[in-house]
Every structure is written in structure tokens, then in C-alpha cells.
Length: 333
Ligand code: XIL
Image (cartoon, rainbow, N blue to C red; front, side, top):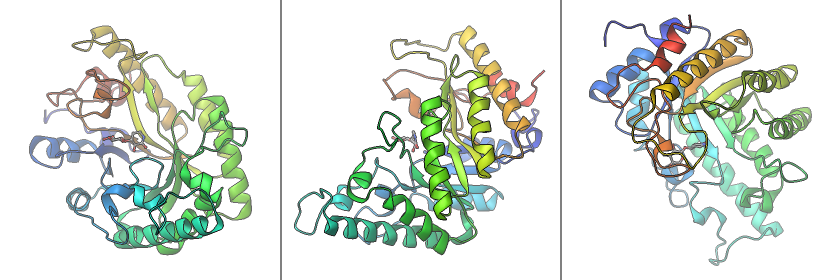
């Protein structure tokens, strides 16, 4: 479809991106990506297991073709992610003697030095090519009294892994925007736990520039009001806010399973995209980028998560045709 408007030409308030996890830089997918988006996020290629699978051996072969494509098409790149509890090789948490770290002082020293070494190498490798980093991902667990996820990172270092990650990232990538990224930030308890963490770390001088809202949502959740409250909450902190992984599932619970997307769900989805993008544009002074977690419905992580079933959460269908969701963004009347 060469006759339809580009998302990026219509939504000019901020860069609009797509996460890429497959071969979407070639042939028709590449054309679609370059036509509609001016930012990309490698969906898996910059995670720790991809970039440092064994200690101090760094490989960029997964990310480099996508980053070359982005450069060739003048697209921004979001780096995702330097520190996470998933997709991190087990050696990171393993002592020299082969046993697993438990949180001794030596464990903490070793883990923080591995963390610094990782960030120094990966962030320095990309220099200014990566304008924004998700420095830490999914560190909040609002069910804990202190709001912190009990990952090995936390269990061994407390909050120091977060402090170290941001400080080292700032040192090696001084012009990059540094984000703390999480999901369900529209849920009041999670939002508030994230806010409290960012407020206290910023007060200490930890260089956090940005809060990333993943926005893995569905056709009936969350409300626009709760999403607006999510954005408003962080405005007084003076941080940038980015929508980092948006998709809108056609499913409202994990028991549903449609062989093909029902027309009513696709229409609901179009209204969700319309209303959410209108909200983001209303807060364009705070929101500095919006990224969808995929390009088209032929490749979405929701086909296997949280259960195996065909989902259709993006703007383009499995045949790369623009959906009603696309028109909700592009032609919101
Ligand atoms: C997902 C990828 O899309 C999948 O390909 C992979 O198997 C698992 O991770 N939150 C995040 C992303 O921060 O890194 C996740 O990406 C989706 C949820």
C-alpha cells in the first residue's frame, strides 16, 4: 500500500518506533518499517544473553544488521536493555568456584564489576548511535514492602545495581537518554512504587533521564483515565516519558482463543489506539517517543505469551495490510 499516509508523517509530536525481532529489515517488511517508523528497538538482540553470552566475550552480530538499517533510513535506535532479570546468562550470577551467588560481600563486588564491564562495553560499542537506553528493565514488584523485585540483582546488591548501571551508562554514553522501563505502570500501586524509586534515586543524583512505560495493554484495559494518571504522576519529576513496548492484545483474559481476530475486537482495538495516541499527543511535552512492540501481526511475542494462541496486537495484519488500528492512529476522526 503505497497510497496510505506514513504513521511518522502524521504523528510528528515524537518519534514513532517498532521493535524488531525477526527479518523485518528485508523486502516488504523493510519497506513497511521504513515507510511508517522513524525509530527501532531491537526486540532481543541487545539483551545480555545476545551481547555477552560468555564472560567478557562481546558479540553484536544480532543487532548490527538492524542498526545498519536504522542508520541507512535515518531512524533512531532505542537500546533495550542493559540490565534485566530475564535473558541474562547464568554465568553472570555464578561465582568463580561454580556455585551460585547468595549475596555475600564478595558476590556483590563481583556482580557489580560484571555489570560495569557489560555496560562499559555494550554502551561504548554503540556510542551515539543509540540515543536512548533502557538501562534497567522491570525492577519493580509492588507486592513487596519496598516495591523492589526480588531478582538476583536485588538480592545480591540491593539498589546498588541500579545506581551503578545508571552511573556507568552516563559515563560511557554521556549524551544518551537513560531510562528505567517497566510494565503495568498504569496500575496505581506499581506506578507509585516506580515513582518513589525514581524520586529517591534522582534525589541522590543517580542520572535517570526517563521513565519507560511498556504499555502491553488489551482492548478493554486500562482506561484512558488511568493511563493519563500514569503520565501525570511523573510530570513533576521532570523526567522524559517514553512509551516503549506498546501493543494492544485482542484478548481480555488468558482463557480466550480466537482462530481469527473477531471484527468487534479489531474495532475496539482501533478505538484504543486512537484514544491512546490522542492522549500521548496531548502530553507531547512529556512524552518523547512511542514504540510499538512489533511491526505487523505476523510476528508478535503475544502469539506465545502468556499462552500459545494467535494474537493481532499491532497496526498491520499478517499480510502487512493496514488495520483499523492503523486508521485509529492516522485518521482519528
Ligand atoms: C520479549 C520478546 O519480544 C520475545 O521475543 C522474547 O522471547 C521475550 O522477550 N517486556 C520486555 C521485552 O521488556 O524485552 C519482552 O520482549 C516483552 C516484555
